[in-house]
Amino acid sequence: MPTIKPSASLRNSYNEISELCHKSNEPVFITKNGEGDLAIMSIQTYEALVGKYELTKLINEGLDDINNKRVLPAKDALESIKQEIKGL
Image 1 (cartoon, rainbow, N blue to C red):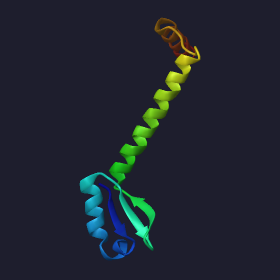
Image 2 (tube, rainbow, N blue to C red; image 1 turned 45 degrees about the vertical axis):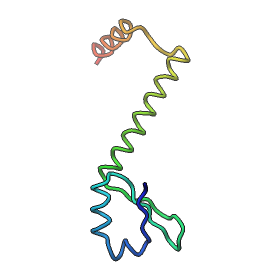
Image 3 (cartoon, helix red, strand yellow; image 1 turned 90 degrees about the vertical axis):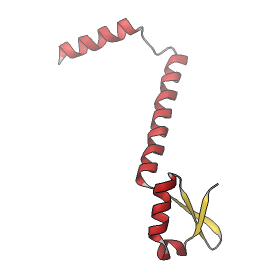
Image 4 (cartoon, helix red, strand yellow; image 1 turned 90 degrees about the horizontal axis):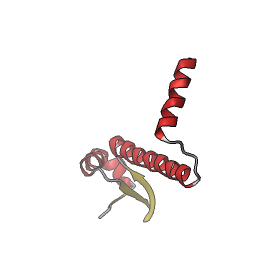
C-alpha cells in the first residue's frame, strides 16, 4: 500500500518522512492541494530502481541482437577480442 503525505509534511515532518523512505525502501507520494505531485525515495532505493532499469535495457538490447542475428559464436567473439587486445 503506498504511503501518501500532504506537501506540508515535507516542512513539518521531514525527518519522519526520511526515516519512512529508508525503512520501507518504497517511494512516499506527496500531494499538493489534494492531487498527486511528487514521489520521493531514499538514494539507495533510487539507485536500485535505476540499476534495474539499466539491466532491463541491456537485456532487451541483447535479445534484440539475438532476434536480428547480430551475434557471433563465442569462439569467434573471443578471437575478435584477442585480436583487438593485440592491436593495442
